[in-house]
Length: 281
Image (cartoon, rainbow, N blue to C red):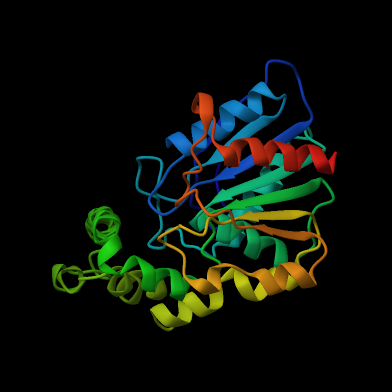
């Protein structure tokens, strides 16, 4: 799918056995893609329940470097809007649901609450393990308990930055990349500068979905486990959910980050998502 700025994103489609007018847009997490098990598992379960799935690969996440210097980030709701418009142009679906995981969950919530006109076809959304407050989530990621995960994210992000440097040698140097010691350094050096933010903290502040939750006006479920080691206390918006009658927060004791493992290789989050969708029909 080509984007208005000339870049592209790849969309992976999977279909229910019978024709349907329902589709779920699936959004992956940081350095994920549309073929991660949590995405394919969600797609398979939805397909088996009569719902098509459109799994988004964010810019540069499908195995091919995207065309522009910028890439994807937690608040890039203009890209989600482009996906929605692309689907509506197909004139196939009259019921659209959005399901985002982690970074994709934050993006979905921000998209719904920013004040744009939400198409009438969008009937509901589910955010799984959503870092509603990006800075507090980063603080958790930088703790020793998450060092393995943080280093893995950083390694992959730096590899992508090396690819960017070959395409944009005037914008990136080996010296710049060598300065990246933490995920915050990456956001200071690249994410903020490539996407129009002052620095990492400005990016976290502007793109955290927490501030937009009060304006969401379609049924939306946030499923954040209390033992999710990536989420800080501010990622559990109890007050916002109490004050918004269409926003629902569920915070079970267990589930981890994008885990929620259950019996028969079907996760609790997959079952709960389908149940939530059925409640909106």
